[in-house]
Image 1: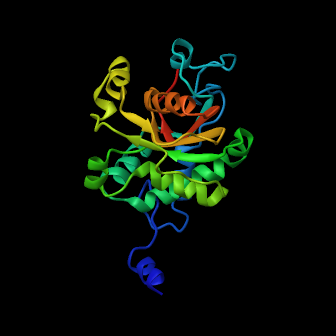
Image 2: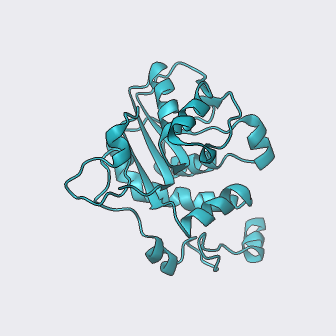
Length: 231
């Protein structure tokens, strides 16, 4: 009854345009944003212009320590503003919509990857306390709920309260993340799926992947809501 009252007072809206929408994404916005398709980078999933190319410019020039990853949408309007509202304006309910969409879109790929455990990119405790939640954890739990896969929110810990990555260049991002994370136990699971909200250069996924493999994981993959434009 409480849930029904809340839904009446705060009806579900489209995460992009704000119109009342039971599904969380209205038909008009779904058509506008579009799921990333081919041609795209075989590794990170960024869209690329040439169909004959296998990798994007970033993945060609830099070796990133994960097997493969995918994202739903390009990080541009209205996706970028929606994610901003999710993270900084306490639109936690958006995370359920994103997570549901990620699970639905990539379910076959998750099975193909033979994922054993889902791990969200952690926030530092100070940042999480200030924000009130970890956006990646909301996504991971929703995906786990819909795929039946276990989610471990304590496997990876952020030791250092780093400056936001968007403030740095590619080289500075790696330096900023040096020693920022730690793995809290020996890993028995072979294939780990890392969840985050945005993929830009891949520095965060790479850093966590290196640690996971040192602790026993064999393969790592990632899923995010959005990704930067490829070449």
